[in-house]
Length: 195
Image (cartoon, rainbow, N blue to C red; front, side, top):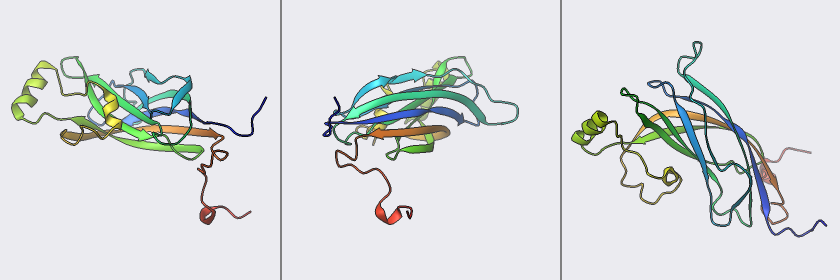
């Protein structure tokens, strides 16, 4: 039996991690996870995953292509803690060790429809030159123990980072029952198309 007064809304995320642009690196893969607030519950799909390793194509000199699918559905009672997609890109260093090549995060788009996001990536940097040399020599570069910290502000204000590369993600967003709960994610009346 259908109810006219829903107690929660649904957010469905479909799309793909299309690829990346890391001019200095090749043979990269991407780990992803969703970070969300306390009122959010994943109801179907995968919350985390890992892509295949990809290398640069002949035609596109710097483009790495993954085309890795994303599909998950969340339910919530309020938009506080709206989900974010966190990505960590890894690849081999000169000694063959898998090292972090970039962290990045983006909020899942608020409005239903098709969206594309280009996410700037960054890596933590050692604070001393001796640490930098030692980490390079030992193949143990600075990295976060939990990549979800990228989506949160706490503790990041003292981290030294360097920008490095971009990841492109496409989203197709669907929502259900948001208007019935009083949340309008569509364009405002001032920007609405004439009927």
